[in-house]
Amino acid sequence: MADTTPAPDTPYSPPLSTDVAVIGAGPVGLFAVFQCGMLKLRCQVIDTLEMIGGQCAALYPEKPIYDIPGYPRILAQDLVNRLAEQAAPFEPVYHLGQQVTGLARQVDGRWRLTTSKGTVMDASAVVIAAGCGAFGPNRPPLAGIEDYEGSSVHYLVQRRESFRGQRIVIAGGGDSAVDWANSLAGLAEKIYVVHRRAKFRAAPESVAQLHRLTESGKVELVIPYQLAGLEGDGRRLSGVVVADLEGRRKLLPADSLLPFFGLSMNLGPIADWGLDLEHHHIAVNPATSETSHAGIFAIGDISHYQGKLKLILAGFSEAAFAAHAIRPLVYPGEALHWEYSTTKGVPAAG
Image (tube, rainbow, N blue to C red; front, side):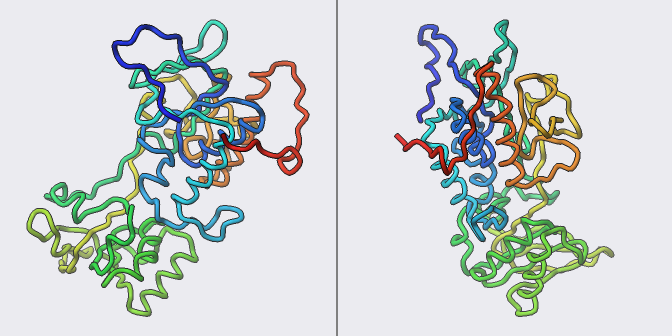
């Protein structure tokens, strides 16, 4: 639904009102809308990005995901689309392209949120599903790399087809580096994977697939090497310089460089809300996903508890726990006669 933020010079209007304010429109936030909707809880969703989907949509929409129940393989953007479709019957209101900058408890016990665009909203409960907070790629310290960003240096892959026939250098040893080397091997003319050691920090089956591609000649492992420089005309790359542990250098002919060194995490205004934090994550009760502040819940990658698994499916479970813990806040004293979705059904969209 459209953003309802008033224009700057419009007369005062009362704050928006909702049962649940969801901060973050990634997969876990979208599933929280569905879980709340099944319990007759209305949701409004706020996200800093201009579109829903979080990292899945912004960083790797065409990356395949393999651990979603019922989907042996699903592209990240397709997962977002399915979750949005699942949430649609409950008519969530999306406020996109804005950040929650203020959060304060009101005298009636509800929470008031304010955003960077001036949206003001009161909610009985708040669900923080902000992933890793405000995020950005960790840029390798290469001279002049900014000149090539967007044309030859990419920190995410939005369209696989744009790399067809290219010579690609992929740097990193984690899931993103390994997964994209596997995914692009069928399109690229040549793929080099640069890593400082032989061991990869990725799913074992993905690593096994990478080694199979190496044996077939579709991928070349450049190990143990690190990025050392760029060659090109200041906009388009012609090669990537790498160096081994002794400083010996060699040039890899390349049209594109994909450095995957993780994301820099910044909680932003969330860090100032007085919530208990554990290593830049929000500490929660695993039975309810509630934070140290009653009525505020955190789910997905931003939450922390003993035994926490950073998996989308774990975030889905946390969304269900949070929704059931929120319902008594909105309907105090009202018994919940829970029915499975197979018997209860879901309202038709629209």
